[in-house]
Amino acid sequence: MKLTLFVFSIALACFCGSSLEARQPNVVVILTDDQGWGDLSANGNTNLETPRIDSLAAEGLRMENFYVCPVCAPTRAEFLTGRYYSRTGVSGVSTGQERLNTDETTIADVFQNNGYATGAFGKWHNGTQSPYHPLDRGFDEYYGFTSGHWGHYFSPLIDDNGMIVRGEGFVVDDFTNRAIDFIERNKDAPFFCYIPLNTPHSPMMVPDRFYEKFKDFEPGMTYREPKREDLLMTRAALALCENIDWNVGRLLDRIDALGLRENTIVIFFCDNGPNSARWNGGMKGRKGSADEGGVRSPFFLRWPDRIQKGVTIWEIGGAFDLMPSLAEACGLELETNYGLDGRSLLPLWEGGELAWNDRSIYTVRRGEVSVRTQKFRLDVTGALFDIENDRGQRKDVSQALLEVTARLREEALAFRKEVREDFEKYSERPYTIGFGHNSTLPARDGVPHGNIIRSSKAPNNSFFKNWTDLGDSITWEIEVAEAGDYEARLWYKCAEGNEGVRLRLGPDGGDSVVAKVVEVFDPPLYAKPKERVLKSHYFVKDFVELEMGSVALEKGRALLRLSATELVGNGAVDVHSVVLKKVD
Image 1 (cartoon, rainbow, N blue to C red):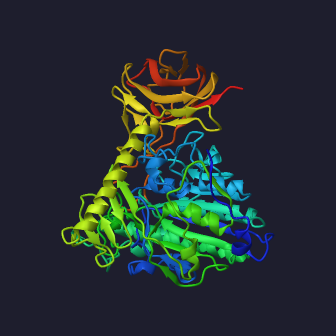
Image 2: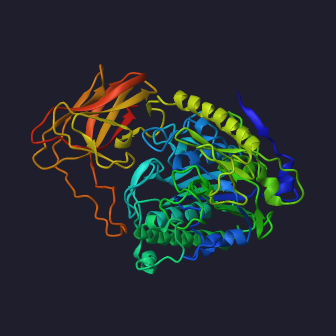
Image 3: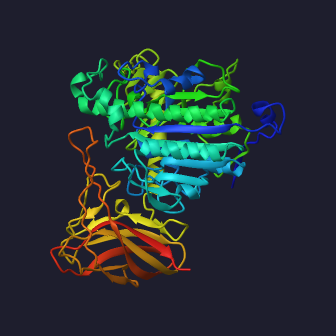
């Protein structure tokens, strides 16, 4: 049953002009990846300069207590749905755990249903196969990658509205170019532009023009435990953050040049804490932590038509508040399949006298729960900290405040029970085939058997290698939307001497197709001259396509297996992905 949470046909006149015919505001949301609260000069970091991002706070507002999740995909899920990520089917960052349930209403659905042009440009990280793909979740356009991270940042392969193309230059520059193009094409009607940039997430690949400033840099501001700081990592992160700032500046300049500045809401925030031990305001924790340093995000918003300059908001808020907030700000009818956890922040943004009730915001990491109220944080161990006076979480006050501690511990236990039930409910989901335009099964989502191993420890952006025996295979748990014949294509690499290997693809116990590999294709791994740290676990190479033929698939769940029926040399192939498309 749909829940109508806000209907703002009358409010449209209040928020968008003097009449209902006034144009609704445009919305641009910039979300960066692994950039902590401290990675901005606006927050006091003198190691770098981010004047264009800082200008959003100077010309609009900043929220000093804005919270996200400890890692990437959960934050995206909360922003997209207005709900705690554990309720949405998301439980992690890879191997299917990052998928947003298909019955969730996204913020893009809301804008699209209200007549906005919608586009997303960058790292999606909430599902690859239809109906999880961005084009199935309310976006008219998508350009980026759907995986949790990408292994190479200079002209990599990119998903361009469901088609694989070669990107153009450094990925963040490329994504920004596409976002600017989208804005230019939709300048005469309201648009919602989501720009989830993928840096400073590793690999720490940085264009020379930005790294030159930092290659010998000695930071004047360091992590609270300086011996834990990796100087090379810090230098690369600072350079990547200045590149982000340059791109934000290009975006803002184009919005201004098009005459859209006054009626465009521009939001900037990050998805979790910093991805290394570097200066972060003395806070405890970093990416992956449920402490302040792992989940406190900068939040800046510029909207000259409605928001006064230089506003600072101290009330707590979070990524899940943005759906109801933007719906109200834009005068949209907000209908969702489920109730929201977020609340509209518009009354805070607009200022004035209001009664704002305190609330608790729950942070979940690996099933453990931390609770943040306006004044306190209960950490995952049950310790209590007075964040208003102890942002660094250095003094446990739980024994001095027994009543507060007991109440928050009870809240944490209750929410942890909900989380575990949700995670169990969504733990066994197959990968979808034939539900839409995209039925790619990447190595990330497969399971290797026998001698086969991944190219890197992180499944995202990996490929399978070391296929040396006839008993080796790769499987994917799938759900087929419609019975029929499906064209099968394999993206592979084959070393010289192994050509002639015969590969079989099909569901266990069902029909299969067998194809012979006749083309040797054995390129080297990509060189990484722009990688600025000593060690990297990112290994990327090109693959070539093999048309295997068509395989009959029955409707429902099955175990799809790629195996070999004949080996010629000392091995089979490396595998990047399998693509299935229903034959009309």
